[in-house]
Structure formats: structure tokens, C-alpha cells
Image (cartoon, rainbow, N blue to C red; front, side, top):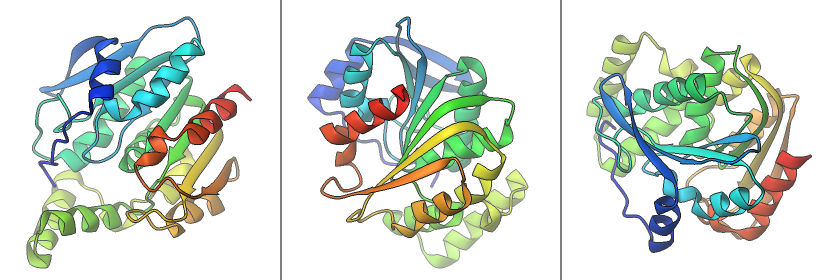
Length: 247
């Protein structure tokens, strides 16, 4: 859970990121790699998921840049080209909070665990107001995500429980109470769109449904044929995001 697998960038991701203004930003001793596409339009912050990186949004970035949006994304701690951290699963949302305070975006698009990190950060900083917020394939309960990561990493139940207890002691957070459906009730968002693929093999449909039930400014759209990751490169999903932001 401290050291997620770093995925190799696709050629298209390398190409798109090479066109950005890249900077290293210091966050509590962690070197965060950031990518910026300056434009005169509203600023959109893109937040990738667990074991992802800023390049995951390459197809979305290309379309948004053409619409004159100012795009900002990054590699979370222990992800992509950013340096490693000792507790990535909590440094991730804290780094999102740090960048939200620094960048003050108009809109946000998040994917998978990025939605947990972003909503956690917005919950901590309700004074940060967001106009449009898109959540793609979002989880709900923090503990479920930790269980999934532990299973993928082959961590035993005994060791996982020790790690959960250690994280809880270090952060003062009861992990069982941390959930997107709780966070959204204390965020300053004007309108939210949740998109989920019914055949997502990583994230169960009940998670976005649970969030949508308690969030009166959100709408949920169930799609088919993109899975968990491919939706970031699927044209009709990108078009839907743009239409929602422009509404």
C-alpha cells in the first residue's frame, strides 16, 4: 500500500505530456511532478487513480485544450514521475488537497481512487468551491479500496489488519468511517456527474449508486462497453464530460 506499481506510459501519453509545461512541486518533502496546459479558459484539475498517472488523461487533455480550457494534472506521491512516500494511500489525498489550495480550479475530473482522494480533500476544505465535478468509476468506502489494494499486492489478512491499525494510529482516522458518500455531504460543489460502466470489473456499481443517493446535486449515468480504464480513452465519455462542463 506504500509503494504502488508504476505503470509504463503509452506512446500517446508520452506525446501528450511532452507538450505540457512540467514542474516539480515540493509537498512535505515529496517531489510532485505536475503538468500544465495553459489557456485563457476555466481551469480544470485532472486527478488520476491508484497506480495511475497524469498521462492517463491524455485523450481528455487533447479535447479540453482544443476547447481553450486551462488543464492541470500531476503524478501523485509514489506514482508516475513523482518521488516515493512512506504512506501513499494517505499522502495521495493530502497532496490533492495541497494542489487544490494552490491551484483553485474551476472544475475537477477524477478517476477511480482519485475520486476518493479529491472528495476527501474537498471535505477537509469546504471553503474551496468547485463548479463542476466529474467522478469516473469512483469507489465509496476507503476501507474497501485498501482491501482491494492489499489483495492485489498479495498481503495477508493479518498483515493488512496490522497496516490498517498502524495507519489509523498515525493519522487519527477511523478508516471504516471514511467514505465518499460521507465526504460529499460537506463539500462545496455546484454540480456533479458520476459515470460508471456496468461491466466494471474493479469497481462495483453499488459504490457510485451509494454516493449518488446521498448527494442531491449529482447525477449518475451508467454506461456500457468501456470497463474501468478504457472510459478515459472513449470518445462518447469524453464528449459527455465536455458537455457537462459547458452546461
